[in-house]
Length: 482
Image (cartoon, rainbow, N blue to C red; front, top):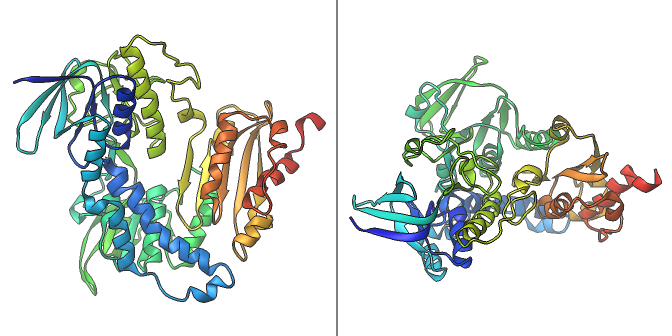
């Protein structure tokens, strides 16, 4: 068997793997990516892009109906067929030709198949036809295989053939009823989507909606879901299965640990993610804490702990399971792989060019629910648990002039978390229509550790929702004047 040699081998051609390879090539290395499914990965075909394409029409219609003048014009219903068609345009009908073409223009080779590490810097790829290709890396192998939906071992659940996020975002029809297991981001967004499309939705979430965020965020989403006829049940699931034939076809059920039984046409499992590391050959590497099927521990440059040549980038290292954060890691990893290969300086101190520091201190996120949520950094409770002296300031966004003009009867809340010892922002959370684009300003303030005294000179334009920054500052006061 002949062996093809590159400076870098990347397993996984999603946005993370693409960016690792691209940065390494731009740094002067040769690279090949290995992909068993579609180039572009989960985000492009079954997650970020199709889900947001599906969620946007309902949000746009709601915004139009929230303003007198446009409300009178927005009298029709959502065109579900048009929504699905638009979604499919974003996935290119699940065809990755354009992504494959981009790899070629970026001078990155592609090998299709399932990769497995068989030795130091050595990977074998088994194609769909069974043919094996051997690849050797001069410098590094980067694992960018991401995650898959975690289906909990509930008796009967697998036999019920439940949906995961893939089926929910690629569906071509709307189920009459839907049980959503899990109140995290996927569960909250899909409950928002399918309730807007007319499904009778029941969310089963032991800890309620979006428990990882500030409490008022999940409470607002739950209130919105309830107002549109959905139910949120705080319970665990003890069993599941098929319930027989219903009016619209076969139905499924879940039994809850509170004694209730819920039936629906479909069950969506949104209970978390599992690392796609099974079968990668990690067990044979002899690295502590590194095994097939497990999360991969890494240092600040995304190199697997205990190895000089193996990197784990993106969701697979469990640092921050978000596409944009994975791409951020990828840029750092691709650059440091090139630097180490070429004997160049490595800057791995906090906030250095080759360190993924933001994974700990400044992770921005948006949740495209009704209402939308945008956040960065820790919640007040998380900041206190980390040992910070903090003050949380809440403000009713409906009192801000820009919000009042954005939507009649605007309802929303914004919280800032301030480190009172250093007078800098640690985190912020925005809940309300139109807040998705506000989180970047907060992210810059957190990453830059901009002093509160200096933020007084960052004047928000009037009238915009960003005027909330001034209201926060007024409530906190000038540090030098207190």
